[in-house]
Length: 183
Length: 183
DNA sequence: CCTCTGATGCAGTGATCGGTGCGTTAACAG
DNA sequence: CTGTTAACGCACCGATCACTGCATCAGAGG
Image 1 (cartoon, rainbow over the protein chains, first blue to last red):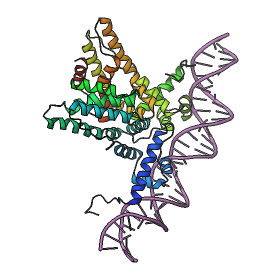
Image 2 (image 1 turned 45 degrees about the vertical axis):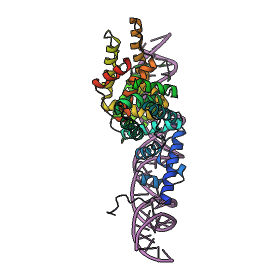
Image 3 (image 1 turned 90 degrees about the vertical axis):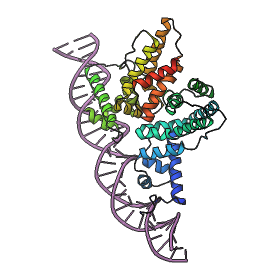
Image 4 (image 1 turned 90 degrees about the horizontal axis):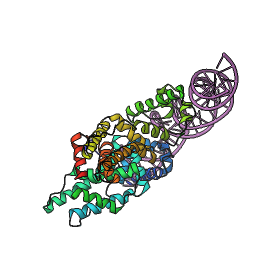
């Protein structure tokens, strides 16, 4: 109890319930905002009792934040093309491709809507990936732009377009973003 | 926007109810996401019967979109400093100042969370303002950047920082954004 | 001033949400 | 294999949400 801080049981059933609930959330969010996203509805879709959802995730905001975090973690591999420009173009293109999925967009929107924590849940991993790319350029001996500047120039337009305007995010456009940053 | 272009009865009471409900939404949204934003709660805060809210605005998404649209329309005056750089710096600074208010941020987040329409409701007027600035530079004889490029370089980072990261948006930073665009 | 009509208030209903107490199941340790 | 205990399912409750006829009130026009 006091030795191991994480007493969660990573065993079969808990993991299965967790995965099922996560999938249910993604499905319901993807089915449009007309469908109201509530704990009982999520539980029913997941084939799980509502009580379980209430107990494991106290609020809808926490649940959405967790789903978003796990969804946006590790899906995009940070490439190593040999050059900073190549890395950034490839990575930005991957992020744009991920945003091309309407379901992903809906998840981001819903998560942001639950509160300030939701935003960072959608961007934390992307920041880490970007930082890794810049750090790698640093080890190459180059002098990459700062993390904040790169985030403003790349993640800013990417998220803005995807979430607010709904404009398409094609690779040619993302290449232009990288150009504007490295120019 | 697309609700009812010709309000059959723009008389005193309807306008009063409308303003009261709008104010109630802004207040409740500002009071944090812990407070659940529902039609009856909004009606109670506005001192209006829930039936009225249900009838005038069919859904919470429509109501939030209307509130956001009217809130983000006309609050920021497009300045004329004589130069494109001056106009953009002043305008970006004003937008950043507007985002410094947590209540405004909360409204944006809540509106975005209701669906795809919510995003454009928060950005439509800003796009129009930016377009006006670029158009003015055009009449001056200059060759301003395209609207999309300017939106990516300015609105992108502004909205991204405000909504997702929560980082401060000070005038020095916005000046850097304009620099990166006009460089 | 009077009528007319649309907007609002009122009372009430079915459905569902959020939450609790308790018994049962199954993952992990020995 | 057996015991322990976290995690889950079940039954149930109060609160309130979304919504609907009907009566009333207040602008707008004659």
